[in-house]
Amino acid sequence: MSEKLKIGVFKFTGCAGCQMEFLRMENEFLDLLKLFDITYWKMVKRENNDDEIDIAFIEGGISTPREIEEIKNIRKKTKIIIAFGDCAIKGCIPSIRNWIPQMESEDLVYPDPSTICSTKMLGIGEYIKVDEELKGCPPHRENIIELIKSAVLKIKPRLRKHPVCVECKFLDNACLITSKNMACMGPVISAGCGAICPTLGRVCEGCFGPMSNPNASALADIFKSIGLNDADIKRKFRKYAGMSPEFRLEAGH
Image (spheres, helix red, strand yellow):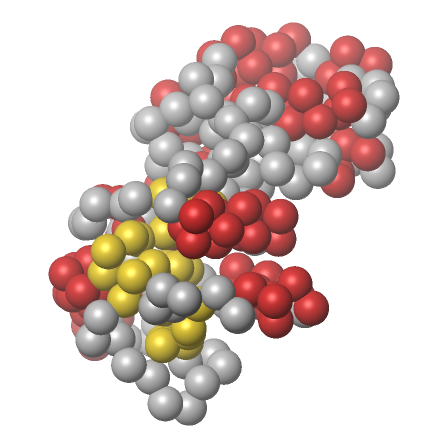
C-alpha cells in the first residue's frame, strides 16, 4: 500500500465552523482516516507537525501581517493548498468591514487601536497560489468528501459551478423571485448547499459565493424592479463575497 497522504488543517481569521464540518462527517470521516494521516490540526490534536504536508485545508481569511507571513510559510511546505470555505476564498462576512476605512473599523472595536496591527480582510489567494476552493459558509460535507477522495485517486474533483437555481429546479421549488418578488441571490450563487433556504421559503443569501460567470448586473436590475434601493442591493452583494471580482461592481467597489 502506498504511503498515506499527509493532511494539515489550519485556521486564520474565521469562526472555526468550516473545521467543524470535518467532525460532523462522523462515521464517514473515520473511514476517510484510513486513507490519510492528519499531521497538523490544533483543534483536535495535542502534537502537531507541519514540516511537510501533502494537502493543507486553510480556514479563514488573512487580516494581520503575521497571518500573511504564516500563510506564505505554509505554501512553501505544502503540495496542495485548499481554500476551505468562503473566508479563505474571498473574506466572507468579515470582509464587510473592508468597505469602511481600516482605522474606523479598529476604532469601533479596540479601546486603543495604536496597539493593533491589522489589515483589510482578504482571501488567502491574495498572497499565495491556491490549488482548489471548497465554497460555502461552511462547505457541504459531500463536497469535502469529494475533494479528499479525488486527491487520493489523483483526479480532478467534481465540484458544482452551476447556480442554486438548478438545485431548486431539481427539488421542484417555486422561484421566490418570480412567484413572491423576494430578493433571492440564487441565480448568481454556486450550488452545493442543496438549496436549503429556498426549500424552506427563505431567500438564498449567497453563502456559497459566486457561480461560474454570474450575471450579477442583471440580478441587481431585477432587485431594483421588485423594490430594493441601491443601498439594499449593495448589502446583498457585499454580505458573503463583496470582494470577489464577480460582485465588486454591484457591491459598490
